[in-house]
Length: 160
Length: 160
Image (cartoon, rainbow over all chains, first blue to last red; front, side, top):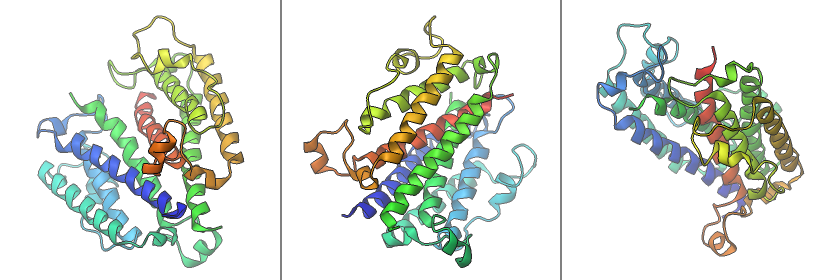
C-alpha cells in the first residue's frame, strides 16, 4: 500500500471510529433520555442526532454516491433551531434514518476507488476545481468527521 | 502536486482551521469568562484550554518535532479532573503555553517533508509499526484534530 492509499485509509478509519462512538452514544439512549438537553436551554440530544443524520445524508450527493435518502430532515434539523417546530421526526425515525444513511455511506466508501477521493465534490464546479484542487472529496470526509466529533463532544454532556 | 501531498495538505488545513477557531474562542475570553463551566458541574473553559494545550504539547515528541515545552501541564489538565487541585496554571500561563506550543507545532509541520507523515510516530516500536503501518504520524494528526473539534463543541457552550 502506497502512502496515498494509507492516508485515505486513515481518513476512513477516523470517520468509522467516530461513527462507532456516535452509534454507542445515541443508540443506547431511551426515549426519555433522547429528549434531554446537552446543557440548560441548549439543543436536545434528539436534535443533535437528527442534525448529524441530515448532514451525513447530504454527503451522498456531495460525494456522488447517490441521491439523498432523507431531504425532509433539513427543515427539522438544519434550517431551524431545536424547539422551534412542533413536528419533527420521532426518536425511532431518526434512529432508522441514522442507521440507513451511514450504512449507505459505508457501502459507497467501500466501493469508491481510492483515487476518487482526490476528485472534486459535487458542490464545486469544474472551473473552480481547476483553480483549487483542494476542494475534493477527501476534504469533505475530513470536515464532516470533525463536525461529528464537535457534536459528539456536546452529546456526551447530555448523558446521565 | 500528487494526491499524496494533497491529502497531507488537507490534513494540515483541517488542523489549522480548528486551531484558528480555538484561538478565536479561547483567546477572546476575559479572566472571568475563562472560569465559566461549559455546563453546570462540568469542566471550566480554563481546564479545556489547558487540556488541549497539554495534549498538543505531547504531540511534539510524538511526531519527533522536539521535547515537550510544558510537561508540568499534565498533572493539572490530564491526569486530574477539573476543580480537584488548588493550584493550576493561571489564565495567562495557559494562554502563553497554548500560543507557544501551537506555534512550535506549526513550524515543525512546515519543515517536515510531507512523506514523513507516513512514518511511525514515537509511541509505536519499529516491530509494531512493521506489523501495522497505519500507526503513523498522519494518524496522530487526524486524531488530535478530532480531539480538538470534540472539545471545541463543548467550549462553545460556555460562552455567553
